Image (cartoon, rainbow, N blue to C red; front, side, top):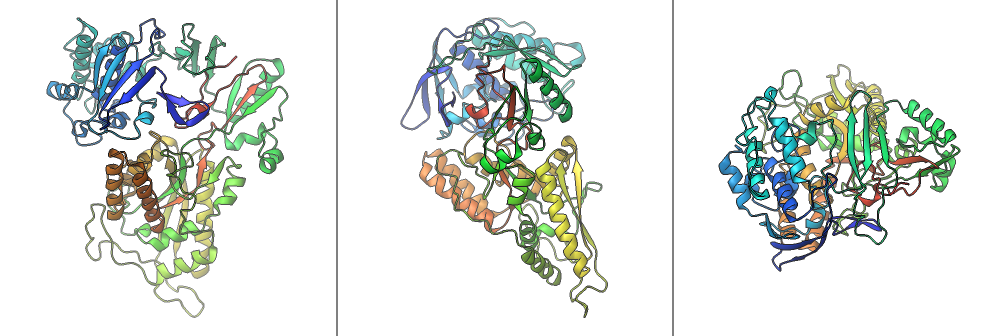
Length: 621
């Protein structure tokens, strides 16, 4: 399955030719297109699907040899026995008995060279979107198995493989390969997870796909990836066939925005074929500011250059609030938990002029958000522009809320597990309980709050700077003793710090796993969601609504699902659990605008897949 280029919110058969679904949604019969080959020359057929889909289940989300259950296999596993997934259920031992249970689900049943039946236990209306995901590719079996086994067989890894040589038909070889994979788990070089795969660690390229380009090589010394045109590409199912007409695409990582700009200008002058991604901070180095801000048109300021974009993506930036925050040095809960108090959350939200930041920091490369669901998120109608936020830019309200929180601090707190904290366990006292005759605190109780953003996130930085300035000014006016500080962190440290629950508030967002409304609900607010584990929010009403939404989705009742999703978001907004910032056109990710020298034409961008980051080059010439 893949996205329809003329309407990227819909999914069409791609490698599949067609499929039918049983009335109960649990049985799907697929017919594949014939005559397609992988880039290495292997034939694409139903056995390739059997190998690839079961491989996804057996790897159980272990993509980086860090820990089991951290990848996106769960998106497909939710259709099956969730008790066999580390992510959806519990720790798995990855034994032969576990493998036999996984394969015993009979997920993919090959019925012919180009036909197969898919058996589901939990059918969902989101199924087409699930199988259009880039986490579930169909891979060349022989290419994949040979290279993974060669990698795992290296003495330095310390693995003992039951099958160093595979034999029999493809189904037998697949089983032996899966046995080899689970034999790498919790042993040798990966005692906390399972062995790295060739695709996760190789610099030698890959010819395991059926797309218009394949990876010829990766050079870590020069930070280059070479893509080679697949001369045998079948052209895709659309009326206009995709023909990769540039033989080699050389992708270079150039960390300096200034250097990228200079390289591009030189290429435009000389007629060299080049494209660069432009972040929001660089935008006006390439396009006319007045034309963009006032007319919404991208007009190049560089002779010999064409500008494309911005490309809309199904992602939403926001600011997270955390309760039950821990001290990173001791691992113990802070006594002061400001965002357990909704007055703090609301004051924070009221202090931000999101519209101003969107125009002047994000350069109009997004739209101000009112909820986590972005426009265009399936199912159609789930995004609701009338869902209201409880906050608006209002500095008087910020002042009054802070004064009230100081004069009447909350005394009841709840742990993340839902139990009430003992009296005195937390203490939200700051400033004073009574203002003096001069309207200030005489001997304030001091408290400090750190706000975090990831280095390079200009929108997050602007938000945090604005909040800290407003709060510090009000605190100074009343001598509250309350100090807000802004802390930039590099990507790895930022993710480690925020996911560990060490941050009171930080700029982040929902970045799509698969384009369906349950994804943001589960990630951001359900009990097993990644964000919930970091922010330590546990709201019974949200848990109940989420469970009802899952039931509606399983029953194929999209009308009820949309209604529940809207109720869910109204509850989130009433409690001010997030500050919604913008629905990005990939501005934050640095890929919203693509600038090409005029020698490159026929560009097809990310609009073909609004659920993905990165560019798509099927038809460059």
